[in-house]
Each structure stands twice: as structure tokens, then as C-alpha cells.
Length: 319
Image (cartoon, rainbow, N blue to C red; front, side, top):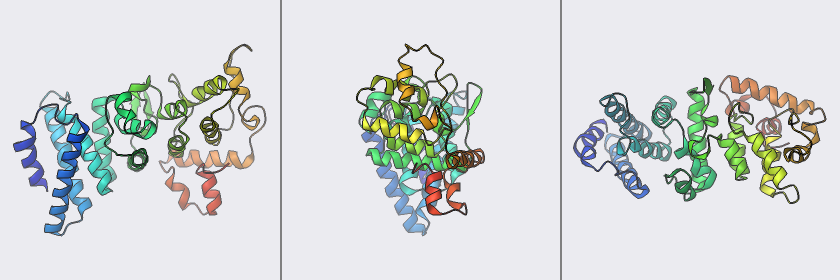
């Protein structure tokens, strides 16, 4: 596989137009072609197709690194960068399980783009709308597949302990701001569009609801509750319900009584504003923080010697 990929990049890829992989259907054609090659190589050599696919991913990363290095460590973008998304789809499809390889892929994406918008927008907005939001159509075909892809990449980023320095703060993949959405965090954008399902996934992986200096999920929630005080969207209610599972106390906004934010604040559950939170909930938060600090969220929950119902509670699946 290594030889085939090197020949492809040397003899075929270099002759293609720079914008060749911008169109989604072109990337799909290359994904399908390489999938057939992976299947063929695994059949001929009796290899595990996951390992063959991992080799293909590594070859693409080496090609990206080489072309970038030959250009003074400045990515050429276009096809030279977009090939990373081709192998990202391959890695997901073939379930490559080497976290170091996937972490290398994610790091290569971030070093050139400083965001993961292309991976995340499809899960929040759906594959069609993602093209309007970020100018890039998701390579994953349905919103459900996009969510599964996010889980896949979050899993490997967590196992590899990936962090990205943003404004001097070590930030995990789940909290990297979205460049195409005013630098809001993925959790904040999920609340903005009332997508409780993807919000739950992000929170399970430790997404923060408070972020210093950036539009954060809690701020968005209180604002939207204020705007919809007379008729709250059920999906927004579910977002609120899920978020309340991750915090002990919401301080009152330092605003005058006329501020519209006060309306939204008063709509939050009193057990998170004026009353003391339940002991069981506080224990959940402490356990989650310990697991988060050790890069064990959420899978570390399920190795704890606890009843299944308690594990579901800690994993934010119930109140």
C-alpha cells in the first residue's frame, strides 16, 4: 500500500489541478478509489484492512508534511491540504484504531486552519447546510454519520491527549472555537441552533459551558431563554436540561434589573441558581472532573465499579 500511495502522489496527484479536491464529489471519487485499493491490498496480502488504511493515512500525512516543508512550512492548501479530509473519511469508514495516527491527522488540520470547522459543522447543521456555513460540504453523508464521525475523532483525540494552544490556554478538540461562527465554541453553536443531541455528545466529552473571552454556551442559553420567554422551543428546553447536568451553580448576571438577560436567568432551575445543588449531582461533577483531568471522559465512566444506572447518571444521560 505504501508503494501504491507514493506512486499515486508522485505520478497522478501532482498533475491534478490545485482545486481538484474542493468539490465534495471529487473527494468522494478519491475516497471510493482508495477504498477499493485498500480492499484489494488487504485481500492480496491477507492483511487487516484497518492496517492497510492506516498506511494510506500515514502516506497522505507524509505527503502533506513534505509539500508544506518544501514551501517554508507554509501549507499550499488546495488539494495539498484537502487530501487530509479524504483520508479522514477513509479512517472513519475503515475504523482505523491507532490514536497516534488520528491525532497526527487532527494536528495537521489544525496547524493549517486553526479550527476544526470542516469536521464539526456537518454534525451541528447537517451536511448540506455546512457548505453555506463554512464554505465546505461535509464528506459524511448524513447528520447522523457526521455525529458518529465527531465521536470517532473525539475518542482518538482524548486517547492521544490532544490539546491546542488558543490565546495561551491549552484547549481540547471539543472546545476549539469555530472560525466560521464568530469564534464561538461548538457547544455554544449547538445551543444557538437548539441541537440538544450534539450538545449532549460534546458535554459528555467534557465541553466547557463557560469560556473566558469567547461566546460561551451558558451565555447563549440565557440569552435565548430571554428571547423565547413566552414560548420556549422544546429543543432549547432540552439544551437547558442537558447543560444543567454539568454545572453546580449559575451566578446571577451582574446586570441591572432591566436587562433582558435577567429574564432568562430566572427561567433556569432554582436548584442551579438560588438553591443548593443535590449532593448526588455534586458528586457527579467531581467524578467527571477527575476523569476529565486524566483524559478519561466519557469512557472511563464505564470501568468504574458502579451500577449501570449510576454510570448513565455520571455520563449526563439522566437528571
